[in-house]
Image (cartoon, rainbow, N blue to C red; front, side, top):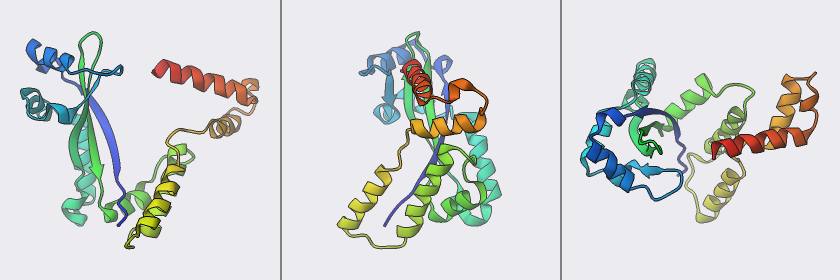
Length: 198
């Protein structure tokens, strides 16, 4: 059966909670340019126990607030909290990305109908398409052929915001701006932003 998940994240700096030895342990585990380590890679270390003791307070409060608002749905309305990745900066700061995860179909229905995403955004449009696929196939037993068809449909819903969509949005929001008229201007801006992120 088709499964849909919704998650959101918060990060927390735990540098000052770690010993110098523990920070060196993490530094030694870095194998890629983005300086990230999967939290599962340190699951059986002292570092992991410290990570578990330091969930971002805001994320914890958000989870409790959501559960409190939908307690009638039972424990399924309590998002799962877990640390996903660890980032060690070049100057030695250690930041952990924590996620809250929801996978109950009933709770996802509530999120779609009562919350949604910020109207008019690409994320809202993408969520609408994803939910439509989920709603159509969620209660069906799926053949391998149908699974492949669904995978193809999902792959067509890009997580990257299309340049054309950004262009149309800019023209809508800044109708008098001459720089928003040309698609090439938007492409240059997006290229510059992606370069800064890298």
